[in-house]
Image 1 (cartoon, helix red, strand yellow):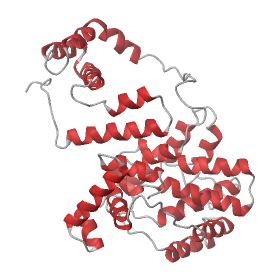
Image 2 (cartoon, helix red, strand yellow; image 1 turned 120 degrees about the vertical axis):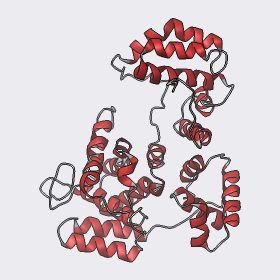
Image 3 (cartoon, one colour; image 1 turned 90 degrees about the vertical axis):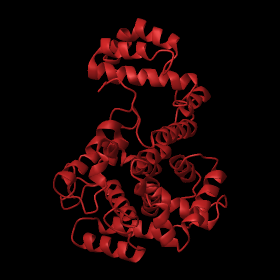
Image 4 (tube, rainbow, N blue to C red; image 1 turned 90 degrees about the horizontal axis):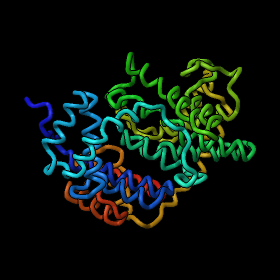
Length: 369
């Protein structure tokens, strides 16, 4: 078989469209230049200049790494005028060696001041990471809400409150470095899968530690799964070194996780989640005061949802965003599959999105989920 023959995979076009729309949404939320947003939204568009450049660049990098530069350029030349514009293929032939050599150079950590705003919002970053696993949708925002309200009730200084919110939003960033198969099992994590999952907070700390201004928040974020009795991870810290911010973050993350569904269990009701946390606090894993503060914060939450979507549309979008199929959502809501599909289509239209992942991202940003 020809290793350079064009390949396709089922759903590839839909996946590419979703990636491009989500990337455009994130660019807009982060305040990136309009030209960047436009390029990302059209990255895979057939006939668009950005799509043609992206296709050639991706194929060049992958094939050169796998089969060598000469073979990659031969394939590109063979498809010039069909898959790639002839002018782009000619540019690749002239400059590909220099481009690939530059890729191997150390990254320049300095970001042009005009490229990113001085204070980029962090909630969209959490939302984007959570798109990796549909059942995580909105988790970082809820942890941040609980941590902030608990910190207010505790009377912590404003600076500590802000740091807690940043750490809560970003504490799941390391999940991006753990394969999806680790999280998607029907049973609780055990063995190798459990060890792989326990690397997530380490990766969070490593990633955020490289971003100027987020080092301290990153250290706090990486401690979200530490426990007072030393049974947490990844450092195995205990009560002797875990301060009040770490204790509140741990309780907030645990509460939010218990209240949301996971592949191996349904969501716990508020009473059951509180009882489980109280039991673990009594056993020395969580701080009693932190659990009480987080529980109080959860009881104060008011679901004030903007009226952009109807209750049915919101519920359907929430269920689909969390990974349920249309058929499963129809069974749970006692509706026909056609009715669920109609509600979902109206929700997408109301949000101005063409794909479900982008609709999830926009709905989260607007407080609809």
